[in-house]
Image (cartoon, rainbow, N blue to C red):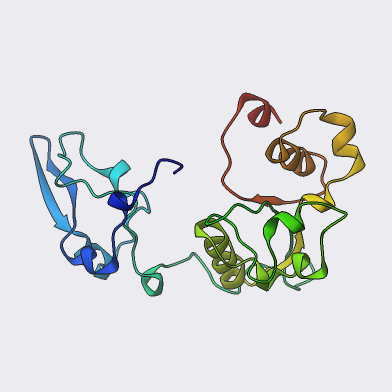
Length: 198
């Protein structure tokens, strides 16, 4: 996603004209307008290009930047994730701020990343609803009905500094999950061998 450019963005109006390739039999490929998929009773994969036939051309394979309108996204359930006692499930989320990716609407995300500069607004779930990952995470958490304990790198534990001596806040965040101090890190992560090994 780091390489995304304005040329790769698509508006909702483009949805009616976009198509996806689907195999109709072993020897041919047909195209279906994405707007038809959005109105169908089946749920298309969020990565339509991955499901396209190997014979699809760039003209018939949509960009992964094309997304269904938010009101047409169907989750498996809404307000349905509960703890063993029937109360909303608690999710401990560490937000790593990056402009346009994960943003706090009340304060500069850089302020939230350090213990000596973090302010109360850094730890309010409703403030982390901007950026392409921040907005998506906010919507998923809200629609599932989970209670989010909002954290930032200012909450990194002493234990994570004992087990990880490196400088990456992303790797440290994964260590926090491994140590049981968090449930999810919200940002754009690369998959690395070290993180995968945990």
